[in-house]
Image (cartoon, rainbow over all chains, first blue to last red; front, side, top):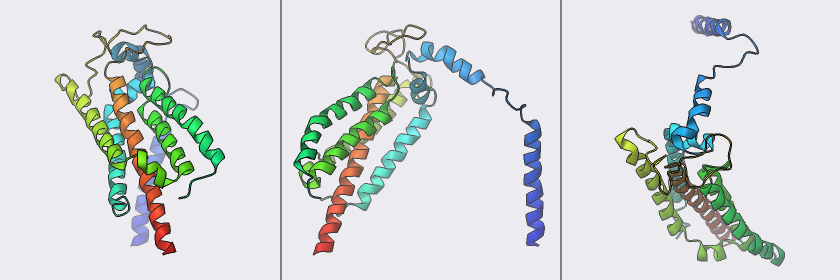
Length: 88
Length: 158
């Protein structure tokens, strides 16, 4: 029974991999770059910052930075709770 | 933790101010040069770690208060979220200060140029908020770990 389930799962997984490999773009061609071209062309006009990387991190993908800052805050809260007897 | 030798302490006195100034430079110029809030905050926190290693935690704790750093961390994160909410007239995280003139709203020259510090809209403010949060968060972590090591050593010796 276990072997049959394992075999079916393996065949499904492998067929998905084969389908993906067939649908992939030809080897050596560049990836799709509409998004990059948009950022390079418009980021300086829209956000007014010279550093396009910072304008992506803090403006276009601000949610990502909010998550990172919250993760850091949670880590510090955990460490303060862990060392609460030591710190006084 | 005992303090290190006189050579190390002298070099620390020479160097740690420059490290802190460099960190704040990286934070404030985040919209013009490589770097930003996270990287500059990590640089300033490395200056705190240098102080802690060379002087020991007992002396460092006198002028690097844990409670003050912790309040600064919370206020940095709150400032970031408030800045994100202020653009809510259009969308969350909208850059409402860009290109309107004033302190942060100069229109930049398009193309490669050395840059103007008064551009970027809300991005420099967010860099400062995130920088404050990261530097005080890493400082709190380093301080608490050092005093924890002190505590453990005292318990083992007694």
